[in-house]
Image (cartoon, rainbow, N blue to C red; front, top):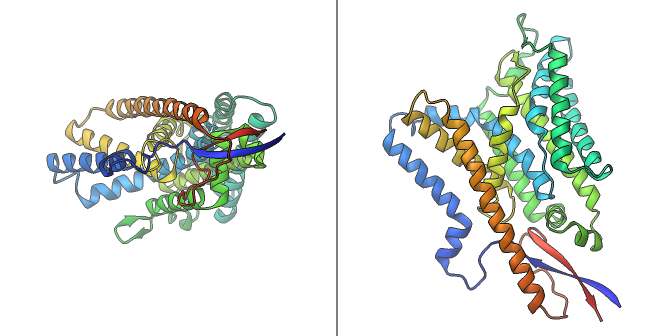
Length: 372
């Protein structure tokens, strides 16, 4: 008796026989909603919301959130979650400034911070994989430890560069622009595009999706599951460190110990929301970018319509996260139902990945099947 594996897509894209309008609404419904939401606020507030200045302010201000949302996305693809990113970004922005005040060259500081972020991700992976601690619990605990270290290091006070000891080039990391487009936004979008290419078109991305879809079956298929989870968590930590560097650069000589946790909920909401579009039913980089975009448009538009209402941002983020998780839960149940139906009707002949599926194993369930 030999063991073969079949790989069958469980993503929520409509089948080949689906109508064109169903394909559009399923894959690009969130894109359409984003455009409509922008149009509504542009009509209601034409002089402020639709202005170039508003775009530049939003693009520059939300670039940190976008990078953190992408950092959350990678472990989610592997079936894990990293809650330490909201606390890590606070520590790294403190160290990125304070180490320069102690005389370190800013380039060395950048390298050390990125390596430190990757090591924190590696620690998370060891807790998850070696100690077999649930990722939610492990990364939340790690985040609290990071938060405590940040307060211990700063004494709970702001770190300020009163003497101008930091490098001017460090501030320049967030002050450049590509035409009218702020530099930090360009960096964040480039990270997202690179992630999309790697995850959708390279073997490492397809294997990562396979690990997240069915870890046991991926292991039976010869995929080094643990290696990909470690890589995903370490990459998440490194991206968090990059976000911390850009945050320290943008704040121009001031680093706060308590900043960071406020980014966690919006980043999670964007990643969950992104799983409902472009590649519905699977977390993906372009979907995460779109999730940040729709949250930014919605919050900015509401704040301009209702100025001074500070509860709008946490309310919008909370409702968005609830909606995104509800949709993701529905998608999961649909995938299970489709997988059960497929297992009943499937033949004994092993199936392979269709050549026209650019994602390969991405968003797929690898189902072991015995051959008599």
